[in-house]
Image (cartoon, rainbow, N blue to C red; front, side):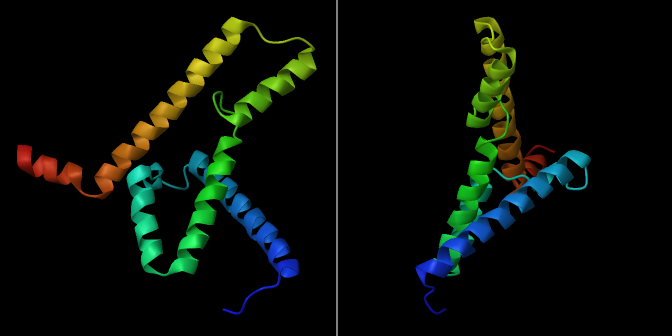
Length: 144
């Protein structure tokens, strides 16, 4: 590809980021509505596998993949889940409307719940990853 001047590269990057955010949000909505199987969610093993495939396709494909991972991580971080930045922003908004802070106990319970959600998602995606590499089938054949 020919080099793109900075005056065109920045608007292109902003447009690409906007399209990716819309795509991620649409995928999340489809997941909640049941149109996408939760088995398609991947965790650390799937990310490593996809990164390896991207690296084998060349440096540009790998950089684009890294940009996609970064956009995805930024989007997830802004979701209103306690423990994430979006959760903090959500609590700031609640405090602005109420004009007083939430109680320490309410914040503690919210953060514990947020941590539980994050850990459950990590466990779920890791189990999906292990299934996608065939571990569960191999264990079933070994045991049964």
